[in-house]
Amino acid sequence: MDIPDLSHLAHPGTQIALRVTPKASRNRITAEAGQIRVYVTTVPEDGKANAAVQKLLAKALGLPKTRLRLIRGQTSRDKVFEVE
Image (cartoon, rainbow, N blue to C red; front, side):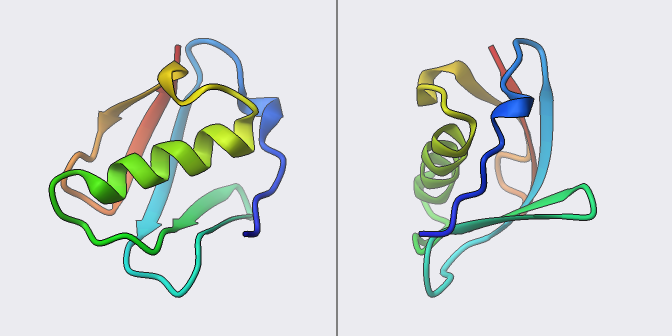
Protein backbone atom coordinates (compact mmCIF):
# COMPACT_ATOMS: atom_id res chain seq x y z
CA MET A 1 0.00 0.00 0.00
CA ASP A 2 1.24 3.46 -0.88
CA ILE A 3 0.19 5.85 1.86
CA PRO A 4 1.84 9.27 2.19
CA ASP A 5 2.16 11.04 5.53
CA LEU A 6 -0.73 13.49 5.75
CA SER A 7 -0.42 14.12 9.49
CA HIS A 8 0.00 17.87 8.86
CA LEU A 9 -3.74 17.90 8.01
CA ALA A 10 -4.81 16.13 11.23
CA HIS A 11 -6.22 19.15 13.08
CA PRO A 12 -9.81 19.36 14.36
CA GLY A 13 -12.05 21.23 11.94
CA THR A 14 -9.85 20.61 8.90
CA GLN A 15 -11.82 19.74 5.78
CA ILE A 16 -10.06 17.44 3.33
CA ALA A 17 -11.29 17.36 -0.27
CA LEU A 18 -10.36 14.31 -2.31
CA ARG A 19 -11.18 12.36 -5.45
CA VAL A 20 -11.90 8.63 -5.13
CA THR A 21 -11.36 5.86 -7.65
CA PRO A 22 -13.17 2.65 -6.61
CA LYS A 23 -12.37 -0.82 -8.01
CA ALA A 24 -8.68 0.09 -8.35
CA SER A 25 -5.96 -2.54 -8.64
CA ARG A 26 -4.58 -1.63 -5.19
CA ASN A 27 -5.28 0.64 -2.23
CA ARG A 28 -3.21 3.82 -2.33
CA ILE A 29 -3.26 7.58 -1.82
CA THR A 30 -1.52 10.17 -3.97
CA ALA A 31 -1.05 13.80 -3.06
CA GLU A 32 0.23 15.89 -5.96
CA ALA A 33 -0.13 19.62 -6.62
CA GLY A 34 -2.39 20.04 -3.61
CA GLN A 35 -4.90 17.42 -4.80
CA ILE A 36 -5.47 14.19 -2.90
CA ARG A 37 -6.58 11.10 -4.81
CA VAL A 38 -7.59 7.89 -3.07
CA TYR A 39 -7.70 4.55 -4.89
CA VAL A 40 -9.54 1.65 -3.21
CA THR A 41 -10.11 -1.91 -4.37
CA THR A 42 -13.65 -2.13 -2.99
CA VAL A 43 -16.79 -1.66 -5.06
CA PRO A 44 -18.98 1.44 -4.61
CA GLU A 45 -22.04 -0.26 -3.15
CA ASP A 46 -23.68 -0.07 0.29
CA GLY A 47 -21.03 2.40 1.50
CA LYS A 48 -18.19 -0.13 1.21
CA ALA A 49 -15.94 2.19 -0.80
CA ASN A 50 -16.62 5.11 1.57
CA ALA A 51 -15.64 2.95 4.55
CA ALA A 52 -12.45 1.86 2.79
CA VAL A 53 -11.58 5.48 1.94
CA GLN A 54 -12.22 6.55 5.55
CA LYS A 55 -9.96 3.78 6.87
CA LEU A 56 -7.14 4.54 4.41
CA LEU A 57 -7.33 8.30 4.97
CA ALA A 58 -7.31 7.82 8.76
CA LYS A 59 -4.16 5.72 8.44
CA ALA A 60 -2.44 8.43 6.37
CA LEU A 61 -3.46 11.09 8.90
CA GLY A 62 -2.42 8.99 11.90
CA LEU A 63 -5.90 9.21 13.41
CA PRO A 64 -8.56 6.68 14.40
CA LYS A 65 -11.18 6.39 11.66
CA THR A 66 -13.87 7.54 14.11
CA ARG A 67 -12.31 11.04 14.04
CA LEU A 68 -13.15 11.41 10.32
CA ARG A 69 -16.64 12.34 9.17
CA LEU A 70 -17.83 12.35 5.56
CA ILE A 71 -19.58 15.70 5.13
CA ARG A 72 -20.03 15.81 1.36
CA GLY A 73 -20.01 13.28 -1.50
CA GLN A 74 -21.77 10.23 -0.08
CA THR A 75 -22.51 8.96 -3.61
CA SER A 76 -19.94 10.96 -5.58
CA ARG A 77 -16.27 10.40 -6.44
CA ASP A 78 -15.51 13.89 -5.12
CA LYS A 79 -15.70 13.78 -1.32
CA VAL A 80 -14.99 16.04 1.63
CA PHE A 81 -14.03 14.60 5.01
CA GLU A 82 -13.78 16.63 8.20
CA VAL A 83 -11.40 15.90 11.07
CA GLU A 84 -13.25 15.93 14.40
